[in-house]
Each structure stands twice: as structure tokens, then as C-alpha cells.
Length: 248
Image (tube, rainbow, N blue to C red; front, side, top):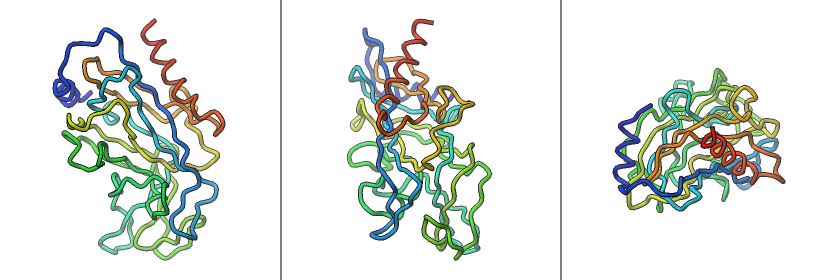
């Protein structure tokens, strides 16, 4: 565990341990079918905002979804660039300016990525950045110019669907003035038939260590994504796991 990052973020938040133990829940905000342009819709896929909420109101000060076995894992749609035009898509889009998450038509709605924290959400709101990375879990990109339905043809950017071990990883502290009990951590695009990996805890998408002001870091599980009509249960499931850990 990258203790130095998390410890510095907790110290930055200052304060004595809260009398009421913090509890962090995970919810998946359904953003619908990704829309890359006025006419392009990625049918068969859904975008979700991964949201963390600290239920007692304490600010979230740091996130470690990079050390050990932590991270977001799954069949994420990734849109990478080819800035040197050599036919290989190697320019990872770990963060995207403007934090696109399928709220308006945007080419980056067909990409899974971290979301900048704070308001306004910008890179300067991070305090220390460790291990920011993405991986396609063995999946490859089609050749430049090749058709890629339901996504746009591969061109300056290529789009692929990660294997089951596709990853989004990072560890960071959050600048004190923009800390909040609620952060939108990432935007992910996944196939409609994928809800999580049965081999992972809660059949889900991995885990993260989360630090809060005045509280001890907590291991938070990203549970399986529920059916659309029961999307709020993702948060309930994560909260239940924390309760069980305390009783253990």
C-alpha cells in the first residue's frame, strides 16, 4: 500500500478521528447508450459514472486504486490515440479534458477514463499522482481505417473492448479546498451483458483504498453492476460489506 500518499492526504485533511465511523458507498450512475456525435450511438453498450459517497459527511481525501490488488477491472471500452501515426494506438486516455461522461454528444463518450475531481474538475486538484495507467487486458485495436461497429471507424483514435482484466488504476490525494464527501471517480463504458467478474469480491469490478478526513483508510469494493431498475443497490451492497467488516 502506498502509505505515504494516503497518510499525507489524511494529514492534509487534519482532525481527530470522528466519533462516528465513516462509511463509503459505491453507486453506478447510468448514463445510457454512449453517443459519440449527433448521429453515432454505441448500441449494445452503456456508460456509467462510478460515484463514491461518504455517508457521514466527512471529506474524501485520497484514493488508492493502484497498489496491491486494487483497481477497476473489467471489459471497459477504451479509445486510445495514435499521435505519431505509426498505426499503433498507444496514447492512453487516462483523463479527458472536460470530464466527458455521456451528458452531451462527445467522441470521448466511447472511452472509459478517470474523472478529474473538484469543481471545476482539473488536473491541479490532484495532490500527488501515482500509477495512473490503463490496460486493455490483452485486447487489441483494429487497423487504422478499419470499420469498428457500433463505434466509429478507427482513425486518429482506435476503439476496443478490453478483456476481462482490462484495468483503470491510479492513486492520488485531493487538494484540500476541493475535497468533498462525494466524488465522481471514473466514467466506464461496458457491454450490456457485462456486470462484473464473478471471480472478484461481490462479483464486481475490483477495489480501492479510500482515505477520509478524520478517519482510517477503508477498503471499498466496487460491486457488480445491478440491473438498471436496481442500480441503487450497488451502494447498499458496498455499505453492507463495510458493516460486515466492522463486525468481524
